[in-house]
Figure 1: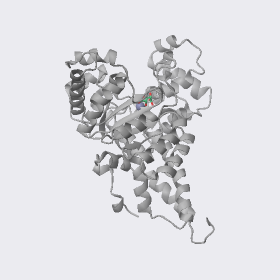
Figure 2: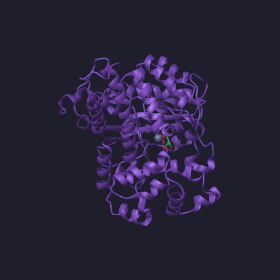
Figure 3: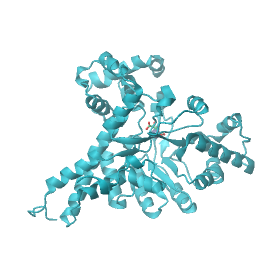
Figure 4: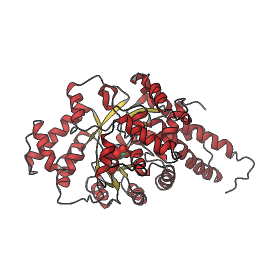
Length: 433
Ligand code: RAT
Ligand code: ZN
């Protein structure tokens, strides 16, 4: 490699790559945000940001009161405690803390003023619609994929009423209780009018398919998803395997929907922490390999929570084109791990993966999650293009834009076989130099 060649303008190349990454539109393919018509389900504002479960877990490292006393506090009081512990008494160094700073800074607020009441007042003046537009613009996000559960009473109330959908929000049908807790879920299906018994006989599997079909239509779901514990195996004699084979996979084939598997979450490691109490374990990826091999007519999206699974996951994606890997999920959504994982994926897969999803639970999260991700991915890409250029392959700006879009939504759409948001996916050929 000869970076000393006079014609090699690596500074210009760096700027070009950074610009393309900064400007690329993004499809945020997994969040916990909601269509604004779903009212209070769409969280936003400073208190919601401070009681985000990523921050709660860190706050409880310092807060000494019993968990139950904390949960009895009002949301504003909980937020004040987190603010005090993580922002006043310690410097906000963690990724989730830095996220709050990035959000405030991007919205033109000064986090150093340390004035929580003033911040509250500022957020209260916003009308949700205008605030959504502003956050999406600041994040450069063109479409937000929700996580929609037909088992969540709060959601059910909205789906029952129906509403004119906000085009910027797309649905994904989440099935954790169906696959992981059939014993308690069967009565819920029965309550919704499906003729199911606890035994997974043919009639019950047909009724589960009817349930999946109807909810896919109601939600206009773009894919089906489930998170799985580290001990999930396939094949197996479990209810999950029977429901996958007899209902979920045939449904996905019939409706041409990918199934997203989020692997390696150990739920309720410390139940007293509630949503913040989940942990991580190394998943058995042979389950994913077997699913990809046994069901070539199905398409699988997959992400893994454990750092130790990442290399194996990349190698699997090289073997199965019905597998698309995505995101640096939850505990891997930190700059050092995004850097490592993205470089590994580029080196093993080229551009055929989706680099990140935000997992935002509070609207403003998309601002920090994407700003931080863009910075990390830009640095990785600069190195990759410099390596290519050193070997005589200097890209044009249009080529870089095309490549970056692959990582931020293009490869996902290709895998889905649709263009979900044509206007959000500018044809790189038409982009200005
Ligand atoms: O990242 C998170 O907020 C987690 O709590 C989970 O929601 C996880 O992303 C999931 O979808 O299960
Ligand atoms: Zn999630």
